[in-house]
Structures are given as C-alpha cells and as structure tokens.
Image 1 (tube, rainbow, N blue to C red):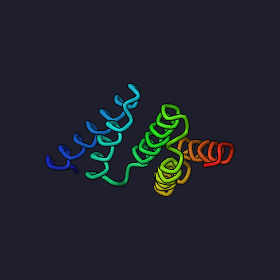
Image 2: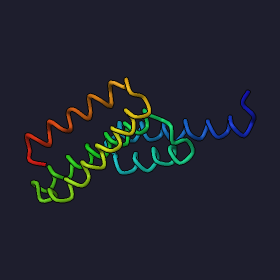
Image 3: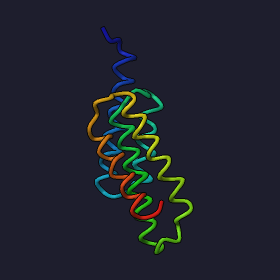
Length: 116
C-alpha cells in the first residue's frame, strides 16, 4: 500500500505532467519541457512524459526553423537527435507505445525529406 509520502510524490508527478500538457496546448514548448522534466525527476519511468518531451523538442525546433527561415538548421539537427532519444526511451519503457513509435517515424520522415 502507498504511504502518505508516496501519495504526495505521485501527486507532484501528476501536477508537473498536467501543467506540461497544458503548456503544450498553448504552444509554450520550452516551458512545457521544464514542467515535464520536473515530473521525470521524481519518477523517470513515465513513457508518456518521455514522449511528450520529445514532441516538445520537435515542435519548438520546427517553430524556430520557421521563424528563422532555416537559419537554425545546425542546432536543429542536435535538437532532433534529442527528441529522437526521448521517443526511443519511451519505447524502451513501453515497447508497444504506439504514440512514441508514430512520432519517431514522423520525425525520421521529416528529417529525411528536409535534410536534417
């Protein structure tokens, strides 16, 4: 059975993860990543949070590429690598996690078709 300390810990995990999702919905990806990472600091076995961080990295990078007419390309390569790592971590935690697999596939397709 969970003790009070475990309940509080899980509550904080949920709060950070939920806040991260809300920020993602507002296209505030840097802030969302910060909240999602706080959730992972408490519990690093969350496949869904890993995937959401990967999504944030991709979306923030695409926004930056659009805002700079591609001038951000060198940094984008590194950032896409980080996003890919988060998707792979999510799949490692839950091998049948389709959302992470789909996002990984989309990212790979995007990178190939756009030279990243």
